[in-house]
Length: 200
Image 1 (spheres, rainbow, N blue to C red):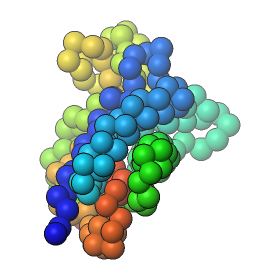
Image 2: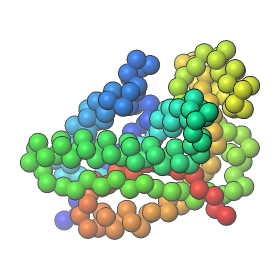
Image 3: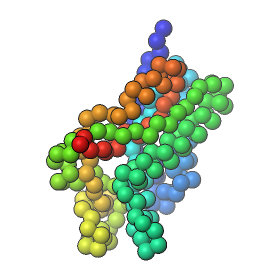
């Protein structure tokens, strides 16, 4: 009998409780809590694909890059996205593997860094609307807009954030790899939701 398959989505903001708890260890604590509930699903007989956001985490990498710009070359956006895919995937892979092992469940948990094909003519490139990074007060945000050329938005009454393009995904490039892993019994494959790659 085929096991039911679930896709579980965890937002990047869900890993950050507040401004005082946004370090890597703090984020890992949030991942451990999520992994406990995901392990419940696996113990109940589900296979799953876990997908996650990374807006704040990408913003942190880009901000570190800006602060270190006098000493090292800046990190391009797509590399920051790949970096966070690997890092967050690693956290879930470690936490979920540990949670399953404590329950006596022997299952492989695999992280897949994905790329998504998008159209180079997507209108999102002309109107960046995806918020990333930390929440800022308006004065700080406007100063960075002037000095760094950021586009900005006010995000749900919580502060101002940098925005980047988020084009409509057309195809997950590693879709067949994920399907193969599932077919081979790797029912717990971790990947990020979206990473932009031009359709050119």
